[in-house]
Image 1 (cartoon, helix red, strand yellow):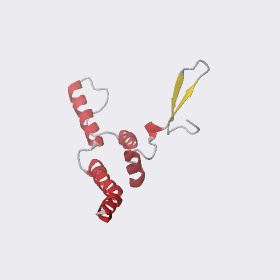
Image 2 (tube, helix red, strand yellow):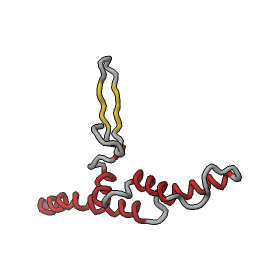
Image 3 (cartoon, one colour):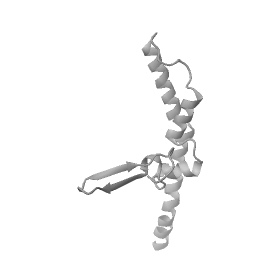
Image 4 (cartoon, one colour):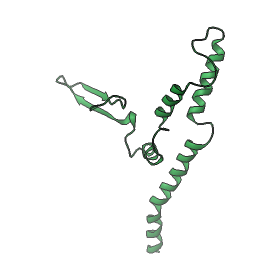
Length: 119
């Protein structure tokens, strides 16, 4: 009985990695992901706007697609994106530094990946 419980406990991390990786792959590779939804929302907003269009209707420009891919982590390697998704690797929104100033008030500095230098 002890051996059975020990084997099951040793399989627990592998099972966790397997299940979370399958869920990550579904969110990343199944059609209708965040980029397609953002593009559909843009097209709906353009249709509602009517004749006074601020930007052309239709598919997003290559720059907008690149920005969406960067925002949702589709520009990163699969393993790095999976680690960010799990929360074990700092993503762009997780790179923040909190400091107390002389008055004891907390100041939060969020790192911007597009700018070089410390956060």
